[in-house]
Image (cartoon, helix red, strand yellow):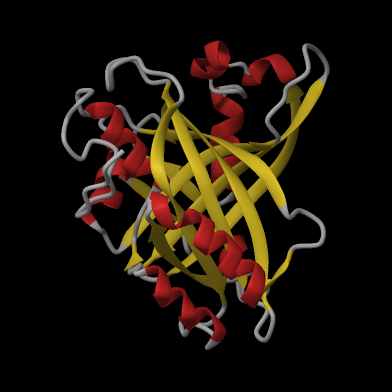
Length: 259
């Protein structure tokens, strides 16, 4: 449980955060190639950052409060994470990371982020349990966002995936295809100690200022996909919590994926 103050200066009319609608479509493993080719036909490739690996360290309470909210489909959800880009880390030097608070209220959401430069060794898997940045600094940044967790938030899981970015040609809505979603549990206790556990399939995310999908993107229906509230965070935790070999362990809620 957390308190978010909407009378904070950042929520004034002048500084009101831009809300956007986010829709997700799960793509079955056998249809990833089709989805990839389809998006190249009906969308424009992002000119600056078309493809890259995205890495995130997620924070939650010991009881995984935000995971439970996401799994149960609560109207209001928040995610605290530290994000960085790229799949190779140098042995020394620094790395740019972003402290992010992603908030969802129904179908609309906002994201706040702060850019930091940290020693690259902080991002090594064996060091992630330290949280990348000091706890007091994380709390300071969240307070700047008007977000005050009532419970201590801890590093829970590292999730990485490959993202392909596009924009819809008529409306400019942002479209991405996320695949090779793999994760490593950081919080002691949950899971089976596995590293780089990969979920099958992919996710198409469509983000924009309007709820309606552009006509061109309606063609995504040929992928036999449904609009879903699929969460990489919750799906990854659920997979780690199931025993290896369990039927549907790596499948999104309500689906059985054969791998």
